[in-house]
Length: 92
Image (cartoon, rainbow, N blue to C red; front, side, top):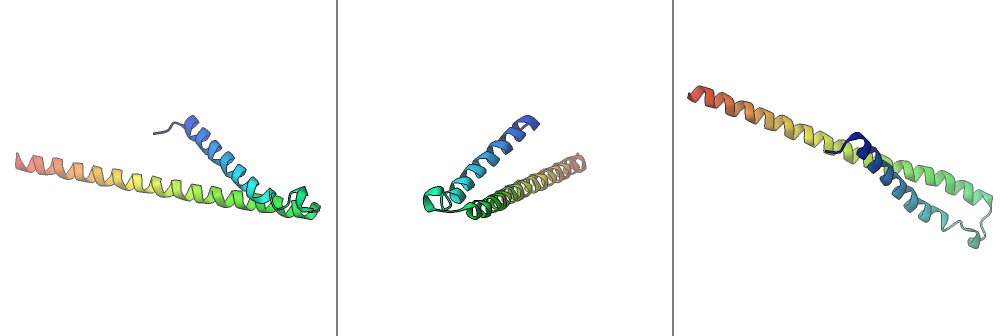
């Protein structure tokens, strides 16, 4: 399992990759070669933030789902272990 520092670093790396991907998608159509004025950059800035937030929401939702599944599996394993020990006691 990841430690706090490693998890923080992994999240930061994911965020940077998302920002870079979003930057390339957003800034290419409004680059100066496409003869855009300042309004295009303003729209691109807000779109960049919006898309980055969507990426992070998806990432956090996936992490939450995985954590939820891990907790369920541990609870099931613990319940199965308790049943096994109860059955062994009854058999003895």
